[in-house]
Length: 323
Image 1 (tube, rainbow, N blue to C red):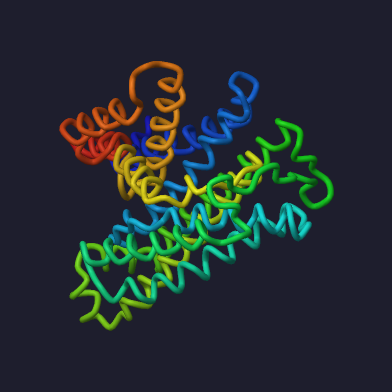
Image 2: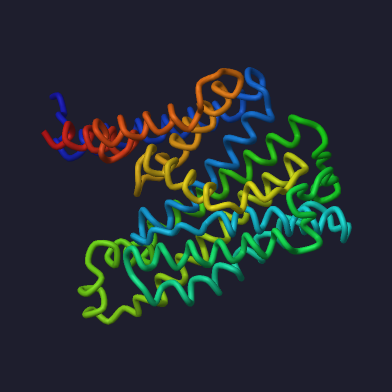
């Protein structure tokens, strides 16, 4: 007698196998990538991918559009670079100092910004971010437009020599994976479900008794801390912290990465950050302005993939499985 699995079992098997297959493939790809491509280029992609994923935690799941995330990204880079180079802290404490600074800054900015909604929230974050930019521009320890250069990388936990390219790459890759795992755990927790409810219908969430502003502020601080982790990692990896990472253009770039990849998806910001970084790298040696082509890609994505690249793929697969 042949046992035929039920439609529910077949669907569950179909969805589960590709998910774990893609996870294992992604881990394997991260492991072998530095053997094919330059580790420094891959490190840059991973740092911006973590930055975009942190921003997506706020926009994609809490529905809050921030134009000030460069303050956390670049601010943490400055703090980590200064603490490691001037104070002589080991790299792990330097990273922690950058994350704590970004979280504290996010708490201060969030307490002011969450009092407003929509475009007013976005403008408040932009104004506060510009204030942070001018502070770093005038602060003596940032060295103005020269930035903090030649940041010592040191030994992570006294064991891992970060001056070695492969050791540095695998350290950054580990930080990136841990960051994504943390985001996945947050959005798939009861806290993440409340964030989605607030994003979909905030008045209804209030009527159910949730303290909406507290949830928004917590999401804002989490997103700021992760963005700070990305900026601190980038400063340590490239031994440099400059004003470029604090400008409002950086905030716009991370928004573009998230929109291209797909808002509200775990892998969307990673894909978007990879696409933008690769285009900037490839067009850097040509006469074609990178912002023009990236803008054209964004327009094409909006016209053809309204949910972003990953978002559109997930939507089409969901429709196919439903049929």
